[in-house]
Length: 168
Image (cartoon, rainbow, N blue to C red; front, side):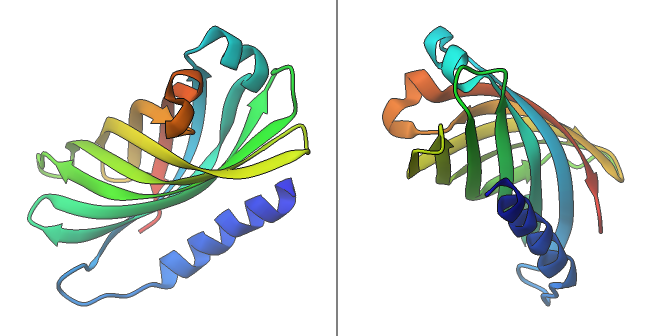
C-alpha cells in the first residue's frame, strides 16, 4: 500500500507538470515538498509517532496575489506505537505578499485524509491545514498547523514544517 500511495503522488506530479491553462487560473507553480509533523496530543504522539513524508502541490493564479492550490501527499508515522500512514488530499487558497522573486505567503486548505492504523482500519476523515511560509525563486519553506481528522481535532492536531522546490 505504501508503494501505491507513493505512485499516486509521483503520477500527480507528472500530470500537474504537463497541465496548461490560459489566462484565468493559469498554472503558477508546481511544488514537491518534504515534510515532518509533530503530534501535539501526548497520547496521539504515542500512537501516531512523528508523521513524515512528501507532497506535491499545484498553484493556479486566481486574482492578483491570491492563488488556488491543491495538494496530495503521503505521510508515514515514524516511531509510534502502531504502524500508520496517511494520504492527504487538500484544496485551498494562498495569499502571496509579493516582494520581487521572494514572497512570504499564508494559506488554508480543506479536504480529506485517508488514514490507516495498524493495517486494520482504513478510513477517510475531513482535514484542515493552516500554514504560512516564505518562497524564493525555486526553494520554499512552509510551517503550519494540520488537523488529520477534524472530528478528533485535539487528538490529531500536528505542527508541521516542510521544505520544497518549485518544479516550474
